[in-house]
Length: 247
Image (cartoon, rainbow, N blue to C red; front, side, top):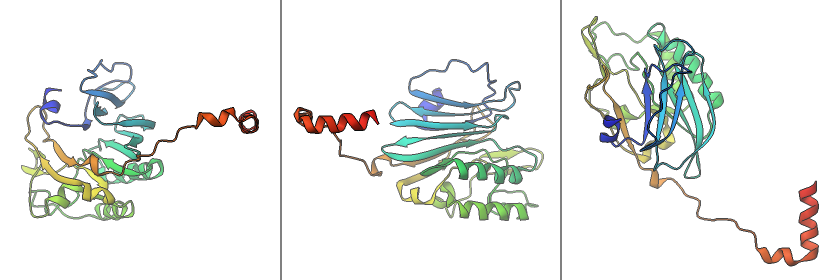
């Protein structure tokens, strides 16, 4: 919590929270008023959570989680705009295959703008996102890129740092650096993002990935409808309204 506050994070995607369904600890509601969790019923080896700062006017609609504690989808509104927030913790085994299925689920569930904060446990572009010399672009990764293109999702960090190489994880077995953590967003949101950065590895073995989103530039609804109470003094109008309410 101290680190999240220090980073001034407003929408947070956490992986490997290690919460069981019946043993979620009581988390502070300040500054994060809304917490959502995806958990495994018996195992604490996984777990994903989304935290939303109290200054973000998020109005919750449905949410969806899998039974393995690897995927959490939250749907709602921010400043009169529909958003779908997705948090994914991809398995180490066959990550591209699992991710393709998860993206299908997101595609059917999502409404409005999409923001995904996943730990992919794989790199999207092996030639530039890893120092492992044997990295090659496989068929499944090509399918994954086609799926992201179909859903109009982009890697916001790479889009804003096209000439930079940076990494979020160090693999001891491969003795290589890899960028496993991403922020995937609807391409229409990109003009609203002013910066994206990769932090330092501190309390986790992964470095945090962050992006600055200018919420104020979203269109706001300034009109507020209100009934003209004098209309209720009109007997004919009042009877007409009453008949519609009864039906």
